[in-house]
Length: 257
Image (cartoon, rainbow, N blue to C red; front, side, top):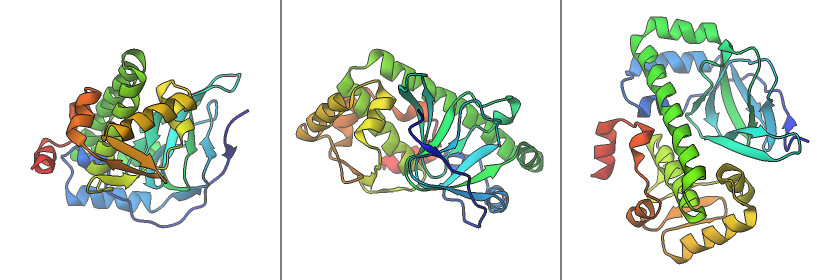
């Protein structure tokens, strides 16, 4: 049985947060304004731990996350689940999903979510209006593929300690790129089951590794928040490099400074 209940969203108005598209570089203020105007037409909501769309459903368009966290996952007939991506505010999911006849994965809300549903024709119109948006969407697709390659490497080659440390690093850098960190702190609403389903571990093993990371003075996860204790040592411990995220180089240099 699915872990989540289905929920159809309601329309509304909202302002899009900082976008991962922007963090990749190349967008102008007028491009952001176009995206904001489009997103405001189709704001929907989903309750925590509920499916937004399921594998086998007919695609309904790309999803632009406005608020809250979600995930993309695959589920086996016996109920076992593999999370293949986490969605945070500013993320764009499945920009080209309209090319498929049916969903090949499910998307669910982890926390209460608000998102904009963008249709294929609307996205094509955006790309026609702005070559910069068209280029940014292409760059975004390459970045998403790069992240998936890293997740495969994570599960296939890194030990449990490294897998969780790497996931923490990636999440922190992604959140920082869209302005959702406070120094070395950020929200982190993932449960140990969520982390286990993303890293191919058991919740018990995740609990043990989180305790070791805390005892080693690298990072602590508690009360739905993440605190990075020593980012340099943490990245070295799991051989993490943010290059695969393809964030704007000028932004990376400013962050380092």
